[in-house]
Image (cartoon, rainbow, N blue to C red):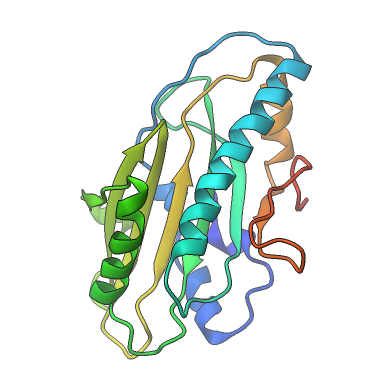
Length: 219
């Protein structure tokens, strides 16, 4: 199961947000994640571990997202437990968000420089990542470029559009957790996130809320 942009943001309504829905999510481009410890914990223990993993990944997402310079569209990340593509029987917790500059003249190089400058002091050294040709939905007008960094068992990936038109550059920020096994809780987790998602959006009481339910936004 992969995160699909069109399903993650049902409230997209303006022109800029519609552009986002036309592109696949970072999970489609996700690298092979590090494999965590496996085992067969009980449902209760596996669920407790899942809560810890989600909270850790969420804190990293919010630290990066809230430190990015503006003006950007309001944060609205989507998170889910997903099967690891190349690690049989393992699951990772992934969060994705779309970075949409509110200044129409923002270029890809400008956005990239801003993100790199912001995350480098946090220990993230973004390096270019080659993308397979079949991930390029529109290589002429919206060629995709990606950068990746690893730290403390987490991976972040930035995928930006090199746009030929007048619309500002934008793209996906993905925070990927390590592949792990959650024992007897794993099947239930995957079932709950088959359609539902965790929502990461600032509220009136918190700039960096962490979900509590599994998931926080049912389909």
